[in-house]
Length: 477
Image 1 (tube, rainbow, N blue to C red):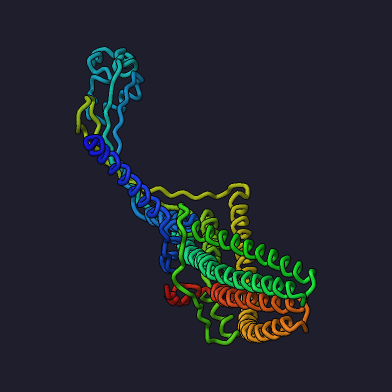
Image 2 (cartoon, rainbow, N blue to C red):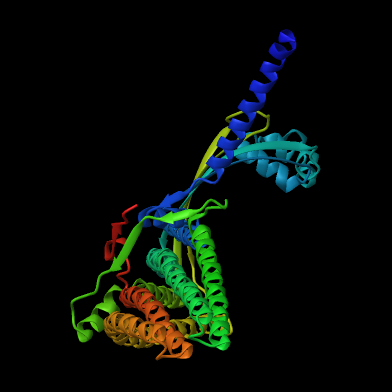
């Protein structure tokens, strides 16, 4: 009996260890992720498709600048070629390049100075040579001297696109900041709305309990009891709706920070967005200078001007220097007879049936489009700035009014509850007072959220929505 009991101990111990490990793994997988705003911001920067695309555009533009800069510099090209022919002209040219040509190639051995008719002999070595091979090693240096400004136009265009890409990246960062701020603060707002809904449920349960007691004492009618129960069901439904909304906001935050598991997220900081101190007139001027989106469009206008310059360069001549050295050898081995060449190449397209004029017209049309886009963006941003300026002032006033409304609604609900307990007020009046209180609480939560987002929208229009503009305070756990 003791032996059997002893033999079961290891099995029991293994089961306990397995259960303990499983519980630890489950607890680890469901551990709460505490997320600060800076951590959320950095995670979003590192993995969101918009930022990855923006960085790729910068790399592409940088490559274009490098390529255009290289066009201004000489190009050195090396080549090695092998050729064979039995054509008289080709074979004789190969021999000349190799330094192997001789009088015998002209039929000197067939010439008889005492016989005038030998002048008319066709030498077979020259006219019908046998198969001959040549192996050529060649170095060629091309030096661009003048091309009408086309290459420098390409460089100017590439640099403008690079600057536009950098400004576009800054604009993408600020737009991402707005999305992270919206999701992070949205969690706070949804949590606050859940708390408001919980208070409403608690109040509805209290009303139901009070109504049941008063109904038992014959103070209120059955319809009051039914109204209280219906009100409880409605506020429970609203609580479920708010919790569902909270879950959706959490999902948005998970997507932004790249959290693919279902671990609960705890936002650990409250946020505030600073306001600029300048007047609206000053902000309009700063917007034109500071907004990275406008700067990016301005650089595209510069790129369009460079494109016009490139198209007009085709009307001018181009001049390049060509220097080459080559080694020709009849055998497949390095070296051989060396020769060099220096050449200057001047080319000028004098007439092309309007092709160049069409290219210039196209470039000018695209430049006009870029300028129109810039002016359109300026007008839209000006309207956005002025609208955001007014919305910020309205949001601040709304918060003050909602805070006052809560204190008044709480007092009104307290008085209606006392009147209902004494049988003076009806259930309808009590529920109306509670509904007004719930509404005031929800509106205050929404007003605080709108105030932060309106300020963020104002800074985005100015091009100032950076991490320095968002202050955060750690929550008490």
